[in-house]
Image (cartoon, rainbow, N blue to C red):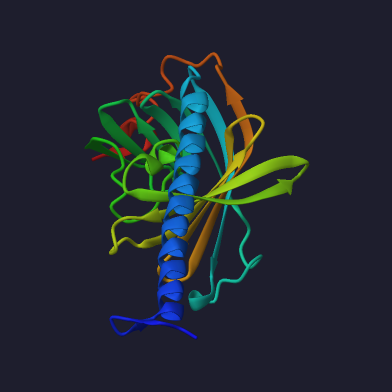
Length: 231
């Protein structure tokens, strides 16, 4: 029979002890899981960041059931980006984004307009741009190891990232990492409106011989003579 101790029975004390032990164990496991995820992300950043430059071709798909966009309704958007340290040249959504380390040049080829601004894309709209693929996770997220899957004969480790900002438009990000190469294979972004944006890297090349003009605006090509306006 249980013994009364200050109004709490022995059985109740055992249940309380088990509860607190479970909480402590869960916290320890979460901490270990989080640290393991951070170490993997750091290894990916170190591996991919060590390249002199990178060329990445990607496909992007969007699912948004609230807006009536189901899987397969729209063809994937194909884009590519060349990165060299903080500089990049990005072809995306029919536009060309050139960042020379100080200024951003956005070339709208349909409208034949060039917009010049100081600084890089800030991402305040809650969207992770391809140019931020290697750096977006370094601030503002907590991490957890996800599932290990076999995709196209590759072992892919998923890491789940949760925004610290409770008002973020991003609910969750899943980063898929090739465990052999330590390269990013896929990024899945879940938005607060139940949207799901998936970037899949379809081609990757590193340490290429690049043109000296790749990260600068060719003012002759995009001049008024050729029908372009520069803002």
